[in-house]
Length: 270
Image 1 (cartoon, rainbow, N blue to C red):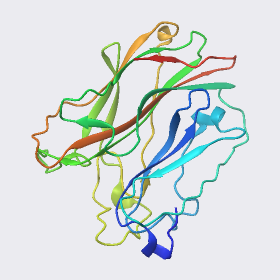
Image 2 (cartoon, rainbow, N blue to C red):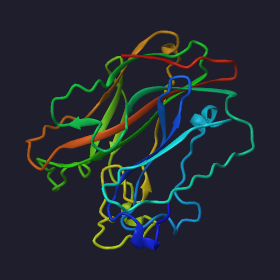
Image 3 (cartoon, rainbow, N blue to C red):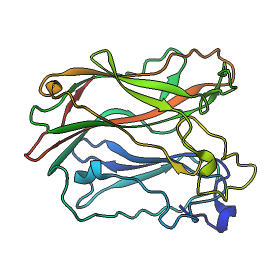
């Protein structure tokens, strides 16, 4: 990520941004990486820029492929983006991968899931993992936005700042936890972010000028293969008082199935 006219050409705020690849079979755009732009600058201080492991999507990254790069820029200042792919020679863990989309709520920072208020966004799905799957995991990216109140006891509003623990439930049983806590904003190697950019204070699960973490959860209960089960993404309880604006979470979740024999993707239903 570079800036026209030096750093003076980059947007002066931390913006939601992501990279997507088109799944030709469904026409949907799968989020393969998310990042938050740094204040006032690009990633010039990093030799390779920001890096993502996109191995889960390797079957989509062969032959003619469409990519979409989005930055939620509210100013006229553009960013110059380039992408390189590294293909590592070696023996894969499994010969065949298939990916299915569970939650597609990542178009931008606020057109996603409201937090702390009643909403009609469906966070519950029925999932059928093929019986022949030898390995299965969920791949989730989540980041929060907004300064909604009441603040936590340490003064943190939601959902950019408030530390939370969310859960993936399987058949209504809490199975995986996602802690939305500090990930080291003060130690960000992109440390040339100019004032008044407030990049050093820790956010809840993300930082300006860094990738948003990918959260992988391995399904080790093979008895789930071959029969539908209920997936639910469950936020930690919190109620907005309507002051301070609104709180939001942008989420993408995929289920990745692997096998050394040919395999079909998992089936997702509302």
